[in-house]
Amino acid sequence: MTVLSIKWGREKTAFEFKDRSLADIPLGELRQRCHDWSGVPLGGLTLISAGATMKDDKAPLSCFGIKPNGQITMMGTRPTKTDIRTLTTNGDPEEYALIIKIQSSLQKTLDLVAQHVPRYEQAVQDYIQSNSGPVNLSQIPLLPARKGLQDAHGLLSENLLQSLLIFDGVVCKPDFEVARATRREAVKETQRLLDVIDEMNERVKACDRGAPQQP
Image 1: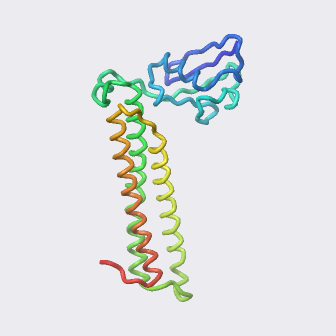
Image 2: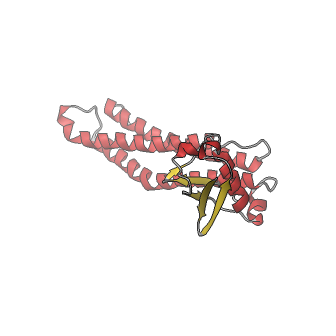
Image 3: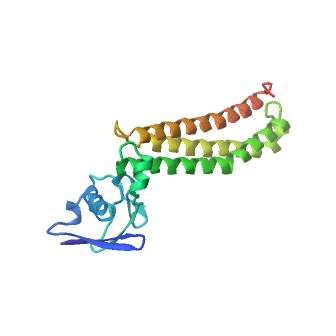
């Protein structure tokens, strides 16, 4: 018999799997047991073992380095009936979980942008003002600043593209109208932010080429 301990905040439980080894138990089955116990929607339920998030519901638990009698941490929020009724199309808790996931990911993106984009924009303006022509040997002191701009653009664009991938990976049922609309708006806003930093990067490239800058 295999016994797995689950810790969810201050709550704990243990699941028994009689006559089965970790290699015989798919992650999806364990997640379903956790859902039945906690009431957390499957779409918002995450299991963590040894600091790593467990993914792929079809994979056996033995793939995640879990030990018999080991403890697994569960993450997720059990919504209230009011939360579900207020946010969703038809009162489905799984749609609620998707909406929260999308909103949470978008907020992380907005927080990142609010923290870094103003500084990036100021650095772009300073660079353009101090270097209106192509970089040459006499402008070597400016090269570190240019490298910093390149790194900043790369970091921001990579994070925004990762956010787009997360939104693209959120699968909404056809009748999850609110979740689908929330995902569309998140994609639209993230793409807009990506266009903003790409436009600033193009201004820097135009400055390097000696092209006239728009006021």
